[in-house]
Length: 204
Image (tube, rainbow, N blue to C red):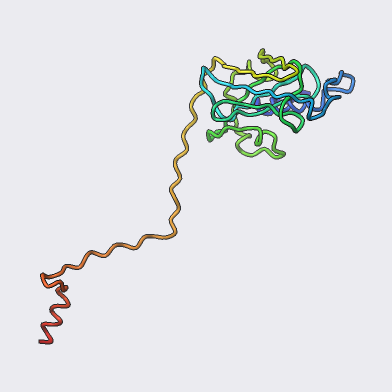
């Protein structure tokens, strides 16, 4: 029986499969035997699209087998720093590299938080992948070999990502309406208002 999944769902199904493994008969990534924070090495880099950085691009390093994947999302400058097994860094070894930029129908990028939420919000349900399919985890030809001391891996994809619509600036909330200014009272040459002067003249 086949199951039809959207691209965002399919991508993250692959990640889950990578974490739990496909079957008990398949070999388990032997590197997990050293699942110790001290075994992780620093892996950083930068992702750009035709030289332009984007924030909230999700970068995933997927090993040939087993659940020892590493992931992070880019900052405003396109920089990332991988995290794996609850700690910073990745295990040394060879990886396939997937790059994903999901954007909701309201123009909101969907980072790791929305993607891994137990209940997917409307942003994820309406999200579309803006990076071509050849860079997702199922087809990517991007690779990285992490050495015993880690490494820096930059990826510049020959892809133009459309600019997202700018959100309208929010107007500052006011505590209440400002009182209307009263027109200034006209004064005579003596410095008194006409009304007051008339009242004094009546007394005389």
